Amino acid sequence: MKHEMAPARQQWLDGAAMGASLLCLVHCLVLPALIVALPMFAAMLTLPESFHALAFAFAVPTSALALGLGFRRHRHPLPLAIAMLGLPLLGAGAFLATGPRLELVLSVTGALLLALGHGWNWRASSRPACASA
Image (cartoon, rainbow, N blue to C red; front, top):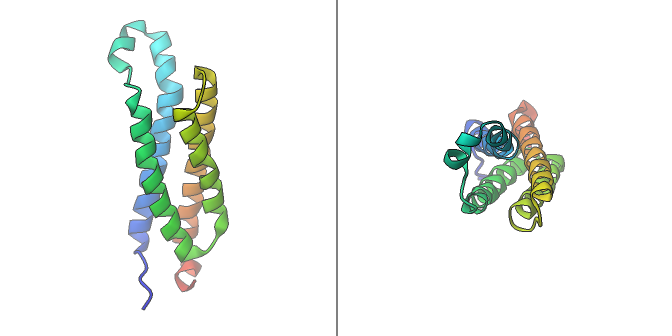
């Protein structure tokens, strides 16, 4: 008997991963704009450097689980491929970038690709035809 994850649980995992990607985008794009616009918030809103490592540590297993289970259900490789392009970019932005601009470009591109992959995974897992796959 083949064990499959319930669609609602699968959607929750993809939703959590997309939410994490959105938080990453907010962190990368909105937070710096707020800090520049409102210098008094700079001290209150700065996050420790360990934030990037923690965010990446959350993204890897959540994405692997959601995308892997989704692929088992729908067998469409595109969501997995797109998200797996984004995850290394996100990691490179967090750990390998040599300057703030490169970090921003890598992190934003990675988060967008990861969110896009999870969105497609969610959509493919929600289709009735994937239940027979």
